[in-house]
Image (cartoon, rainbow, N blue to C red; front, side):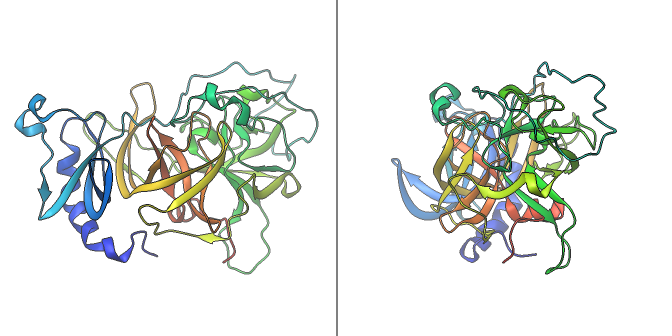
Length: 362
């Protein structure tokens, strides 16, 4: 498999793999990643292993076992405050269903009739307040639907349509099925959906209803494995696809272009962009790569994700599922979580492999 780590950080990644479980056991640590050392809010450019903490506390307030060591195996460490990392609000909403609708049995293509008024809404983690981003919200009904606009399983609020894709079959070829790509918690209701469930565009919070606004049917998703009292299983992506009509789907991402290739080994300090349902078009800077993070899904559910990408804040609730690109329109990853200061992204290579889809031709 193609490496997801730049060659000049490969040795650090080995040390990280050997030490991160011990660091994650320290209270207040919510993640471990590769980055560059910060000093007095200035980037020194020196590679390091970064401990991500929910709150940065004075050393005098911490017991010996709660301190992050200055070095691990001769590699310098850094401590960065990221707050609590959240993937979304899963409180069900009341949905208006048409008479006689059979959500699980029907497999017809999505309807193209009707329209919905857009309103601000909520779904997954981020930094900019939803109220501050109302003017940029992409909540209207759109056919063909573009990346960046509101979408969601019929029982959630609303997330973001990342892009559209097709099966990872021999290339070149003649694809037979086409999908929208977003997060598991946007399209599969954080494991609580059934295959064939209705996906609405716009999402329910933005006025999407059954059957008028069905654009696709849930096809497959990567289950999220949550912490248990005895184990903390690893996850790699929060991702799902739903099949729709080709004529209803566009791979164009509003204001960001179309993914032309993959950028699977992004570097720290690279500039990236995304378009999402709540904050619209935003840019950010990659602060950490190869991150292992604990993400809160509400209701006491926490999931640990490995090989993640972390950026400066570039999202807000409702942007979950956005496809993140670099400035050359290469796909970097799938936005799925964040805090008030940082955004968390699944590496696109893992998304493609685990969902068995293709988002580009190069």
